Image (cartoon, rainbow, N blue to C red; front, side):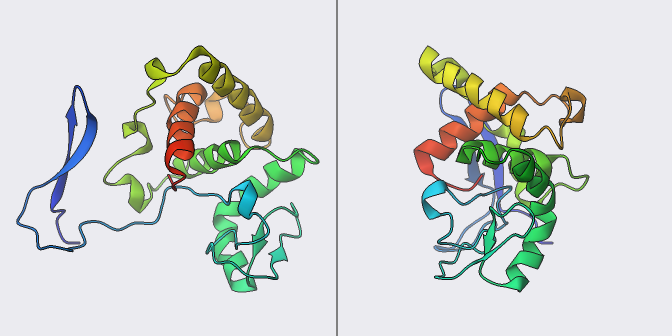
Length: 189
């Protein structure tokens, strides 16, 4: 693998960033990886494939949870590694479907529990994200507390107690990381 041409840095007033450590050409690709986690938002559910995110008129539904939908058997098979643990959680919380941010954090946690870090974790890890808890209003903090409770209910099939979470993992802080990024940018984490 070619050495990275960028490095991480932190500033007190602006947070984390990347800077070049080598001469770069305009348009040069610096780093590429799949996202740590992503999920189809409520407004696109049933319209795009849960794996490739391509829109299609007719999607196949997961026969177990009946929530995830795929454009083909090939996409469903590729998605199974990421979906199988989430699938149990989705089945257990029927008929209530969790909010998008709860499902996204569930996928993040499942990915962080894997022994091999994903490619996206090599440059910036989930722990590197800032939560900005100190900048949130009390109303937003209360909303995150409610999401944390919903998350615990949603993930009860996979995470019975805090010992099943990744080391030093704080659900409230994780929601502050995911929710702020999720609502402000609507990006994949």
